[in-house]
Length: 192
Image (cartoon, rainbow, N blue to C red; front, side, top):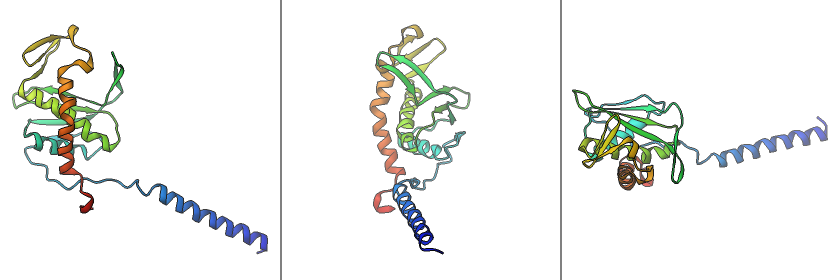
């Protein structure tokens, strides 16, 4: 090898080494965060139909915190973006819950948008607050009306999304539930 070829060869190797070091530093914090190992109680009938296999763990931890045992909770992926206009502009739903009464107890389907993993605890906490509202009878949904704390609200008279008391309730309580779920699922820095 000539002197010039050797310099190009060594320069190429140095460039590859620098590239590998930079990529290692950039992606150092991209490690998958895992939850603590938790046993899902046999009474929690959770069916996760999404490709996010950790979502049932979040729901199980949340059900344990709130102390409610619905018959079934099904987790489904939202097929398309759901949004609507509000006084504050466009609202994009990250999730919503539907109750399906059955002779065997209430069943719930929680539809979820595709989100980063770290957002699911907060989103599912919000939906679990709605589950509490359904289970306690504070929120009841029917084809053309709903009942909130005994007050009938017809579909043509539903308040703006941000003004709905059941949504305000869920927005206010879900951070508390989310923190309790995180206490169960997220390893302490000392435990890692």
